[in-house]
Image 1 (cartoon, rainbow, N blue to C red):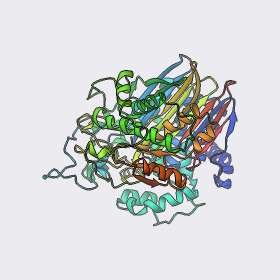
Image 2: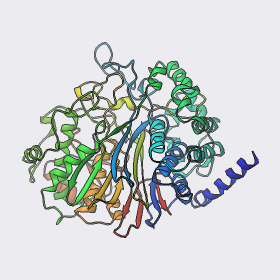
Image 3: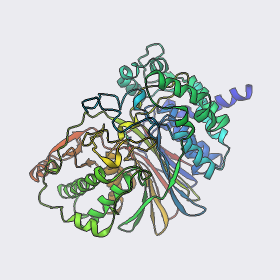
Image 4: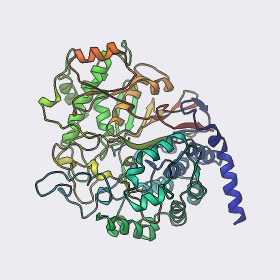
Length: 565
Ligand code: DON
């Protein structure tokens, strides 16, 4: 007991500099020899550094960071959601994709979110128990550890147990986030008690303690997957979901399985790119965009120029149109042809006119989405051996379904909204879909998450990923182009203003206050509709130079932090 207390105190002392500094230097570039990482939280990054200091490899770090983010970044870090990892195993040089995406409950059905008239029932796929897919995060982190970890499981989970039990200091970002979502979280007693037990208005500097999550993590620390998928935690998940009319059953939890998949791989310029295959659309859509733009000599333009934005967006528009038609969970739906085939891409390229755009609405009517800003989180880890781990995981929108599991201190996802709920009906991110992504029992919903590993001459070059729903794909793709074609260093590549097009809705989204008025006017003249948004993506990346020195960068758009050893 005394030893435990001592360990907790030592641990908190180690984190003290971050509590005092207010976590401001999120975009500082650093160089590391032994290992580097970038995450959405200075506390999680510091835990990663501690794991490296203990001799842990990139997989150990990824596991400890995954659990730490579930505590300190509750809007997206999770054990009640799911995600993907693209990894490089240095010992075999193999690159693999781990799918720990949520699955539709066995009792779900194609029209479950439609009323008797066939209309979408408001909020049903986004709020509360009906919105939840069967969580996969714990199974994913456990698999990463079991296959590739070098330290002991309890040791890696312990950081998060201590953080949950002792609390962490709320920073300005988290205080604002709690305030923004207080009303929506308070709809459910379980979440209200958890996040606002005394009806708090959280301030920067307050300590947020989550003993229920501490208990849950302690079970996970003791028995790995057992309690969560078949034991006490499973009982609580099923009871909570049942109370609110949802579908997740004991059978759903007990039968949940991760899947190793072959990553999407293709070349762009001299780079070898490996990203997430279906059930994420990330790798294939990124591949289409890069292959479409690759044929043009656009490096003479500025990365924020009319010419490049137009070319990129016309390419993205074509790729996202394919997304809506052809992509879904490969265990249920076969993509009918190779959408990265060179001949197919050449044909599609003929549809790009460098001097004008036409309307996506001429092809298929779209409906403007009611956009709720989402939160996913991505972290990138690399070690000196050349192990690389890119993890993107999520509850879908911020704080997921807003429903916390009774007595367990964690939120459930609202990932079911990523299915095509009805043909042509847009999801939270304005994405439409059909047959390929329709709801079926035990199927995985189509994602845009794009954890990505890039090699050059078979050697690790960089690793990256982002939150942002559909904007993940364009953000990650733009950073790859900035590094390769515009030859920008990593920090500048991340700092470039970003833009987005996803076919429907038919507009270019620009980061606000980031583009010259002449650029906006030029795009309007080409026929584009322009909308603005506060930010597109939040990339966390690590770059490895020829000497093996690692640069880690956390996107200055978010609260993240880069670090290493
Ligand atoms: O899997 C997907 O594509 C979405 N559920 C991701 C959501 C997301 O990135 C929200 N983040 N800002």
